[in-house]
Length: 250
Image 1 (cartoon, rainbow, N blue to C red):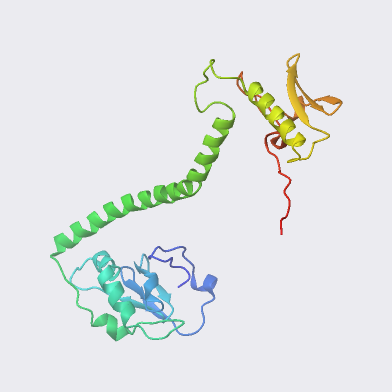
Image 2 (cartoon, rainbow, N blue to C red):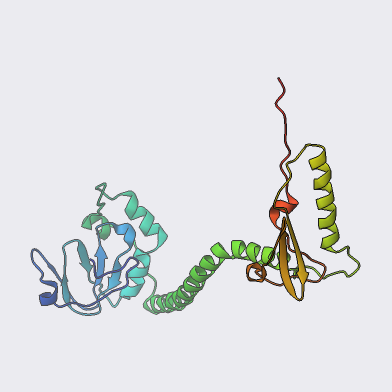
C-alpha cells in the first residue's frame, strides 16, 4: 500500500525480493483494478501496470467484456462512490470497507466507445487540473505573503518619498522641526515636559549628515539608511514625540 500515493498514483515498482514480502498475499494481473479497502478515503485505486502481488488490504478486481478498467477506476473515485463507501466503513482508527460492499455497488455502464471517450476526456481535463493545481499552489503561496509584502513595499516607498510626487511649494520639513523645537521649549518652561540634555538636531553640511546632541556634533552618514527627497529632513523619533509630566490628584 505504501507504493500507492493518495489519489492512486503508483510511486514505485519493487520486486518480491526487494519488498521482502512475508505473510498472506494476493496475486493480480496486468490490467486488474487494485482497490485499497483500508482507509478508502485515500482513494488508493489504480489499474495494475504489470502482474504482481499485493497485501490482502488491496482487493484486485478483473473486468470482463472489454469494459475499460480506467472508466471503473474513475467511477470508484467519483464523489458519489467515495461518500457512499466512507459512510459504511467499519473501524475507527483504521476504517475499512468490506469486499462484498464493493462488489454490490451499482455501476452505470456506458457503451464501450463512450467509456473510451469518457476516459480520454477525464485524462485531458485531469492534465489541465494538475497544471492548474501546481499554479494554484504557487499562487496560494504568493497570495499568503503578497498582501503583507505589498503593504511593506508601499510603506517603504512612502517613507522614501517615492509614493507621491513632490511639490516644490511645500514648506520644507526643517521649518516643521523648528516649530516642534520651539513648541517643546515652551512646554519645558511650562513644566509640562522635561528638558532633554542631549536634544538631537540633524542637519546637512558639505553633502554629509551631522547630528548635534547638546554640545557634541558628529557625522552620522553611516546611519542614514536611504536617500530622501529635497525638502525632507531626518530626525530622531524622540524629537517628534514627547511625554507630558502629569500630577496625580486625589
